[in-house]
Length: 204
Length: 221
Image (cartoon, rainbow over all chains, first blue to last red; front, side, top):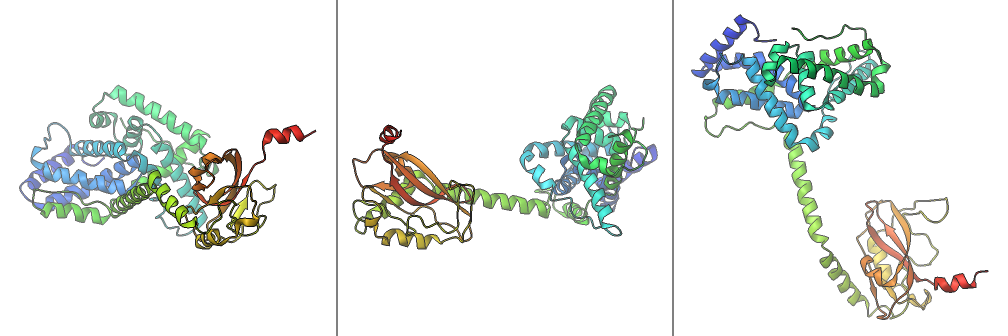
């Protein structure tokens, strides 16, 4: 997790302090450091690349506007950015609930298949199945499983981002994995091409 | 599905997700926001979102325009004008057959109620059908009918059409754009409607009066 350690946290504070004084390069470093986690989180939450781009941009525009208001003693920068991205994603899901389902199908066809086109298609199909199953989860479960299992955040970090207790994170994650498994069982594509990998655990 | 299948599918998804990056244009847009004046900063929408929003706006405007032109009052007003214009060409009694011979199939129509076979023929343009309505000699089409079929929505070229036969009260024909000439019209009529792919009627092929059902049932052994 970027910025979770003490040194990285201090660097973030230093960078933000410089950015608050008008240092554009310092802000650029902050952007490069966190843009991918914000984008990945927003994309997994909304299921739409276009929505994720908009949310990523809005998150950093908010950061530009509120550089002086950020309080490092209250939360790390990553927690702060995750929180903004979460609020924007939930707001976006509420506002465009009707349209995101049909848009998500249009945004997944950009990958090219280099060596084995059929293998690439099968992989993408399996990923789309997982993406659909994830997108079908209720938001409160979806955000927990994204943060824990996709972004490998600790329970404590997830609890800070979602502003809930660690116990609530554990129970929601358990329920989210159950729901995700049930939804994937319904999808036939998952059983067609099993891959031997290790399971994913949340780091505590 | 076993645990390993679930884990492998999830892991593949997680690996693909870990490679996701925001496009460079997001960085450019954000840094442009940095350079912009502090007041009035607004994020630039992604091209996909802009296209979708523009498409939705155009669709909403089109739906609004179509809805305005489909107000029942205006529709009947147009049809009534056409009816008045056609009165001088059509005898007071007689059923017009827009497509000529009664049993001739309508081009482009799929006969849904004529047995198990169905066939789609090339579509006939609406203008031709409308002209036929006005020019057909109705004297041979059955002298007991008191109805005149007028034009509906124009059929599109290559549009699949269907022929739907209805038996309705004669007095309800105004809903289909058919004007009643006989003010004392009553009873049932068979209406052959040409229905477009959107489910809306395009034209009326034929209107025939129905012999009293009670008389038929009494005559049957």
